[in-house]
Length: 190
Ligand code: IMP
Image (tube, rainbow, N blue to C red; front, side):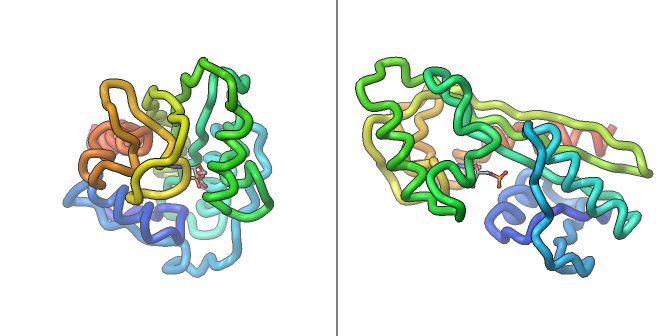
């Protein structure tokens, strides 16, 4: 099954392709001629996933899906949430985001957090959404060099190590995106 994944991020593409498995051919934005950044103007992960999927569908009329992910920290009332990519700066500065998160949580004992991914799928012109969540906590310092983003600070429940200390396979098996893509696969196969 051929389907457009609204990303040009190779890292994400290979993560999602690995979870979806054989039987799905993922097509990138560049491959359907969309080279501009799709504006993410929504106030929620649901809105942003939907905006991106609709953007692709309106221009290509192809089956497609888009994802949006946020780190939701309980003691920060769900921040950085939908602003996770641009928490500290305007760009995607992972190191600055991690420094800011540690500083916002300094002296706070409630470290509870979760990653949440929302995927919006448009198939045959009909849109539906699935979600994946992993609960965990924010460490007091960074550990590990795998993965990206907040991985060096996020310790999933049931683990003593951060996502950045896990192999890609171990992370995919329990991660927000892994779970959202597993739910997507069920919808696509169903
Ligand atoms: P996106 O919606 O997948 O682009 O994610 C938005 C932001 O959330 C990214 O820029 C990262 O800062 C963060 N993020 C998303 N997924 C992950 C992950 O798997 N690990 C760590 N950080 C992530």
